[in-house]
Amino acid sequence: MGFRYSLGLLGLLSLAVLGGCFDRQTATAGQIGCPASELEISDDDLSVGSTDTWTATCRDHTFICSHITRGSSGIGVSCHEEIAKATAEAPRNDAANRGPATPKSAGPAAAAGFSFDQSPADAQKICEDAGKIWKAESDTVGTCSGSAQALGFVADVSIRFCDAKACRITVHNRPEDKWTAAVAQIKSALTEKYGAPQETDAALPNECSAEPKFVACLDDKGLILRYTWRWPSQQKLEMIVGKPKGASESGILLVYARQQPKTRAVNDSAL
Image (cartoon, rainbow, N blue to C red; front, side, top):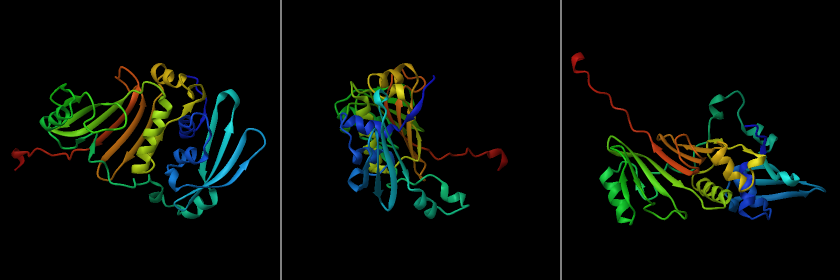
């Protein structure tokens, strides 16, 4: 698609939330996956021109951050852990210690008011008791016209059932406007609750950095941003921004999934 990638997404989105007023605390929080309330900003060096740097400390980790204004191209924020400390703390030649970080809390057992292992009948009752409309799309998929529990934003919910038990809950939101702010707020809330995602695929092209072009890139150019959390308990949470394959429109999707244990049929002929 000819995109040029150079902006850190969370730096951009955090700035968008502030409506153009640059705030190092907020910008840094999204970049390094640390709650803004736990950040300490120091060594603020405002250079002459369009670049300044600062040091951020969170939970005994130190990061060097920079902020570069690129004229009409937008603002870029980048943070990386200080080399000396990152090298000293990482055991050498130990591949086992280079795996993804473990989420800071247990995996979600429920989402939007619905729980894993619920039957279709139970999910329907919860949906309708909340004043929403339930629709059985098939024997394995049901939808609710809204969340059964307040989320802070409008969303519909789709539930997949495996062996008549809820195994995947998808929350779908399409903001009316201010997409970048909505993405930043939801991503920040998930990071606050679960820690930084283990996987991130969210390179943002310069030409898609500001609205309304951000939405146009999602709708028309196939831009998809993806963040993934995983748990040893076989649970997974994906935040997907864009229009996944088969979807009719772009949105912000939160996909909660729990792998069902596999059961083997007994081969009575071998007994």
